[in-house]
Length: 245
Image (tube, rainbow, N blue to C red):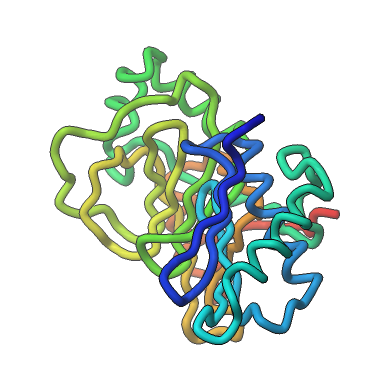
């Protein structure tokens, strides 16, 4: 008998369903699929849902709705299928976001490649050819954690903080990429630069990305990025996109 998934109360604000102790692709898949199923079920007691790397949160007023009632309903739902092998929710978006790797725009590519044990050209080939999923949104509005990359990129964070990386920076560590919303200090290595805006408060949909979306970061030259920057009005940063079935 497995210890997962686990159902826990979060004070009086809701219930958390956790599928693993640490990040794995099946656990993230399960969290996304469960959230979609709960949204489709439209349970009246659930006022909001969200996901983290391996968990699904249901916002429920437990001062009004008994936690035991919600827990029993969740247990029934969890036993209805293998969530670790569930289909990802439909209607997700695949983005191709033009990215400059290295140069003075993303100065830690060579350092990250050295830590990973590959040369910079191979690092660019691997990362620009990868297709990664939005695992969760966090730290800053609309900011995605993306993964997982191959085991080659299971590299640690830096020992010290970089004082600041710009908005649109592509950052790498522990088999994940992060696309930064705002200029910010970070302990992750800055390997790529885009002009994609993840947070667009002026738009009806303020977050450009959602958990489950997929992204690729094809390589371009700095001059092309500057051309995109000068013309971009949408915040897409020259990206193309398609709806995933």
